[in-house]
Image (tube, rainbow, N blue to C red; front, side):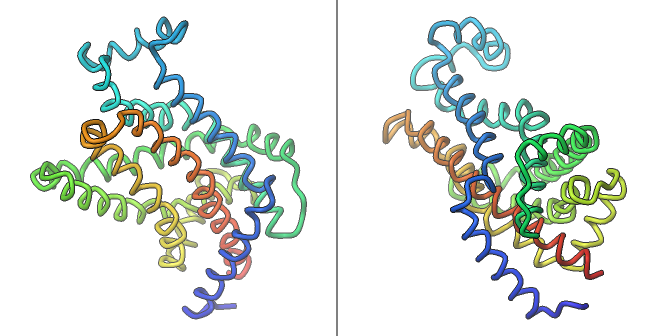
Length: 283
């Protein structure tokens, strides 16, 4: 069966309707909630690094990265978005994120078929597939960071402009990077649901995206844009937030981003699972 553009639009709308309904089913997004709890715990620790035992653990590490002046209030909140981003990307990324994204895909695959997959079954599948999932995380991270870095270097004169101009260009960079993420989107479903090896899952993801590019791109771009705008706003306007408002508002916005991220992930990976199940079987 071949899907016409209208069929794909209808499928996209139907899929989002089912995902909105799944918000009421906590087990479907429980893996992303667990990830968010790790993110929030890390943000809290970095926000309060000066307290008790945290000072002895975190300060020696942070002091090797940032100059002494940054650790004075309220300057520290200028660095907090970058510190949290590094923690989320490079500490949680290859560990909690890899495992929980696999569990979520496993459970959402069951939800698509009307089967109740257990959380424990998802963990078992995630640990058994950890190596290819970890290698995929490295590949995706390197590609996305390389694309963003190249764009930033190539257009550094524009990015270095006013905060508003910088925000617009960096948001455009994110939209461009989503193109590469789109071609990789179905790799985790291929590994977790179909049991493919990394190479086969990557090839299958590229083919499936190539046949359904705009559908796949908007699966990522629509929900991810909401999170990207908060990320870019906090990182780009943190000095204005600290000057004009309470410096701790920076942390508050990051907590909001973490909470929103639960449902951003649900819609991205939920839709990816639905498209993978529907379109890959139709090929």
